[in-house]
Amino acid sequence: MRGWRPNAGYSSGYTNSMADYPSGIYTLAEPERVAIRTWDPTNDWNNSYMTNGTLFCIPEGKANGWQCVNPRRDYQNDVRLNLTTADVVEVRAAYTNFTQGVAKICLLPEYFPGEVRSEYNGIALFVELARSGGDLQVTAYRHVSTAADGTTNISSTVTCAYVPGQGVSMQVGATNAQVYYGTTLVTDVAHGLTNIAAVFTNGVFPHYEFQNVTNTSSAVVQMNGLRSQSLTTFTVPPE
Image 1 (cartoon, rainbow, N blue to C red):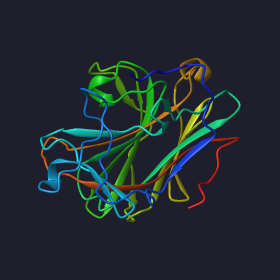
Image 2 (image 1 turned 135 degrees about the vertical axis):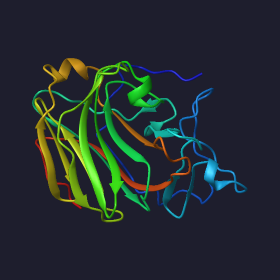
Image 3 (image 1 turned 120 degrees about the vertical axis):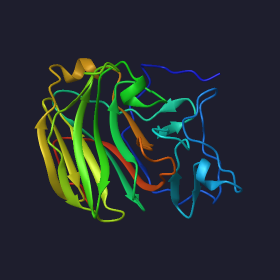
Image 4 (image 1 turned 180 degrees about the vertical axis):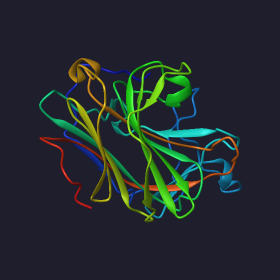
């Protein structure tokens, strides 16, 4: 049985380079819900696994199939960061071998082992990443429900030259959201949430997704360099 205490202490920050895990380690899934799928050496294309300091994110092998990563301090304590009107929270990840599919870096007000767009009836902010030729397309969103109009882009799509392994950071404060690709600020926009402290009253829970799109069923990406932290102000990431 897994318990959760809403009054548990906040995390000061979370960094995971994936460098200290044994190759082939099983990744954890919530009981009765596939959050990250397990490693099967006979069929790597259907299961996520970790090797050589990298998490190979492999979603369900069907159109729009997904998988997600929710960082934990330990089994009973999710990573969650305090966010007030006076500070900023950053959530970051780096991707390599990203050729198809869609990645999301999300800030949620609770733990959620699912796919945000189609399954989460709550408020969230996230940045969505997709490849286009030799570029990476970056778009920031506000999500409030699974309804057809429940997800709204709060920024136009920004096209960046794709650099393998370069980190993407989403930073959120009282009124604005910023997205960095490496050390370059690509988006600075009002997120539209009127009371950020009330929305994230139990803290910010980092949440990462990777999924196939409507015309793919075998997307895979290598993920490393996870980082989430509280900041005193919007800050250029130390790439």
